[in-house]
Length: 307
Image (cartoon, rainbow, N blue to C red; front, side, top):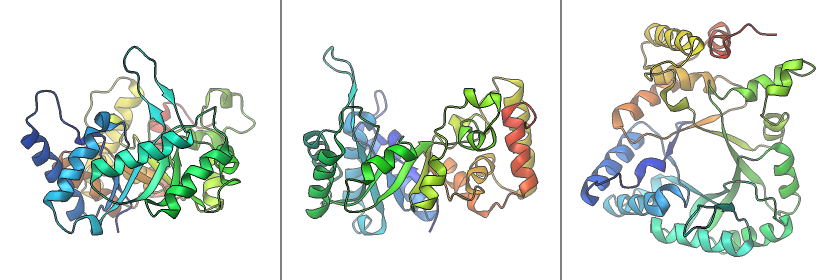
């Protein structure tokens, strides 16, 4: 089984795209992922305003038997701005239940394998959140529960009210968003003030069996084809290209291999619908970066020596 996760953010219709073309694009992406061994698909109720889930529901309808081969996860908890009202986070019991049922309807399934709470809501009462999650779990609509963009302390706070484990935390982790590494080496160092990753979160997840998922894992192509925006980007891109040539893989594979090399067991989420790029990403699991090469990539990306 692949450690990579197919992100469905881009499955919704593009501007002026014919619905049939949207479905063909989604089918091609899904087929490429499954052929590469990627069987976990990541959704959220806000992706494409819900249309990404609807399109994937059409994919499942077009591929009988595919649902049984896939692990589906979706997220709830963000309300986007609309009708002149600003956006907000909403993890009220009513919102959790209504939004989850909406996702099931759009996906055309009777359950999801995992529901993730998309963002922390400062107004939540963990006991009320737990009531909603337990109801969804006991009804068979949600098999497992995870979170997204939460610290280890926030996970522990919510876990105390739940009778079953929180099993995943999805965070922005990449060679560009590398504060999860920096926070561990800048303890007792003045540069630590510039690090925004909540220290101890990786350790909490590993100690409690919480799977770490990385959104933004490819850093929007920053090191695998996008024009460099800094000297550090240019140097890192050059090193990525050299390592890709050494391992006879794509540049995307090297960028993802950097995450896979970390002992916390990080699972990258790839957010592309391009079958060629999906196959390029899948090559990451054949790459075993040496410790030296892992550090070379890290130092190149940070643009300065280690402390």
